[in-house]
Amino acid sequence: MTSYRKEYQEEMKHIHNEIIRMGYLVEEAFQKSVTALFEDDLTLAAEVKSGDDAIDKLERSITQACISIIARQKPVASDLRDIAANMKLVTDLERIADHAEDISDSVFKMHDKRGNLVIPQDLYVMSDLVKSMINGALDAYVSRDHDLSYKIIRLDDKSDMLAEKLISDISKQMQYYPEEELSVLINLIMITSHLERAADHAQNVAEWIVYYIDGKYAYELGDETYGASGN
Image (cartoon, rainbow, N blue to C red; front, top):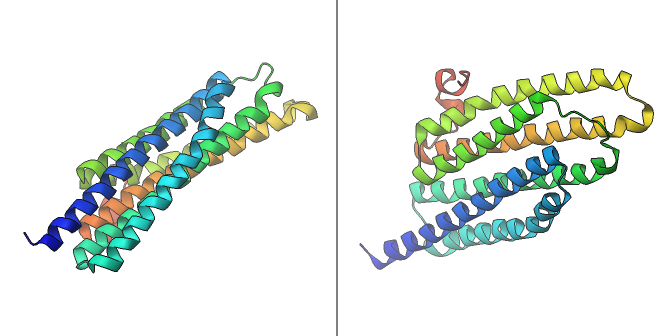
């Protein structure tokens, strides 16, 4: 192995390890945000908000490291694909963290107005689904698992359907709420949207893994794998 290849591989290993570390922080932030929602826990919500800067800093650091490798190492095609996928992937991870922070913001806004609010069961179901998508996408990244990546991609349809149903159900409830309490339901709709967007970004992470492995975007590889519904 030439010194060039050894140096390149060591740098890429460091980047991969940093992405795994960032993924852990993002997954933790998401879990804390939904727990804060369900338990009305302002301490957890505050932890999510205070931890977002560290995730942002990691995203910038990883992106800069990728740019530096391109500039110095002049990687070959397959190497460049790996670097490009990593740069896109960390952007999606950072967006998931942003949505966790947005959910935490809503927890603060709802705190004094929740009253006897009952969280819709579908919101628990959807949060569990999105959590499994994030976890699965990160596992697929670590193991470069092609099949698991496709499984995560297919799950996004379920997230979309749950979000549509939740928003419809919550909107119907609004007619029975006094005007001063409507802001709580509005925040639940916003939280549903944040969950849906987090699922979209988890799907994107899985698609970038497919891109790295196959050299093609997932949707180019056929409806049989991309468009089928997940189980």
